[in-house]
Amino acid sequence: MVDREFRLKGLRFPNRIMNASGCWCTSANELIDLARSSSGAVVSKSCTVSARAGNPLPRYYHDDIMSINSTGLANNGCGFYCDMGSLLSKVGYDKPYIVSIAPLKDGDIEFLLHQVDATPTVDAIELNLSCPNITGKSQVGYDFEAVKRLLDGVFATRSKDAKPLGVKLPAYFDKSHFTAIADVLKCYDIAFITCINSLGYGLVLSDVLDPVIAPHQGVGGVGGKSILPFGLANVFHLHGLLPHIPIIGCGGITTKKDVLRYFKAGASMVQIGTELIKQGPSVFDAILE
Ligand code: RRO
Image 1 (tube, rainbow, N blue to C red):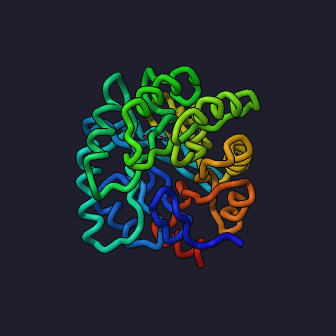
Image 2 (image 1 turned 90 degrees about the horizontal axis):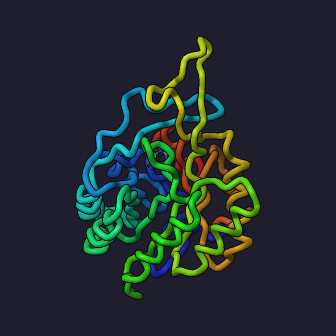
């Protein structure tokens, strides 16, 4: 039996289910929908120093077994997501607001952290180390040295009372990768791990053999029902290696039973992505019922 609420570094989550960053959380209206929904937290779209239009449309597709996206970090800029904190508190939500940040070049991380830390209505930070859809950029989470350099910089200047900071990881597919990322993460005061992001570099072709999304010749991040086993295994391995860090499981949840599967694998909370896009914010009611 798992308690409905969860506490993390002084934050109270009224329940353990929230949106995955990128899903129903880019515009003000979407974020307000989430604040009013029965989710246990609101997570923003990953944001950059300045707003980005993202990749050409169509950039998202789903069917019964999967989704694919190449959104290209379309977002309204970090300032917008920080400002949303006060608007969300006015609509009366009583749950943490987590801003997801995505540094793209040197210097971004300092700017993003400074802006988010200076915003009292933001409760926590999810540092995205795993966007698969940026032209010319690899997923940072696959370069263990780069993750170490980034986190060395982040934690060198982080005070004890700074906002809780978690990381969003890509899926790993080999035992050596789990130990490598765990060896890096254990050196810092990581508040939570969110795993997994969409599986990078998938290709979906339609019945007439055309790519279903436009950017990058149809190649993008794969989510939805099909990726559940990878999400569960990533949670399982990382929980085994880093039992003191709460894990937010993500990937392939469509039912309440899937949520219980994540808890069994070692997750403390979960995020819903594709199924939220399919059903809208009432998905939280369906799963919590
Ligand atoms: O915006 C995206 O294309 C995107 C991001 Br930042 C991410 O973290 N994961 C994803 O599947 N798409």
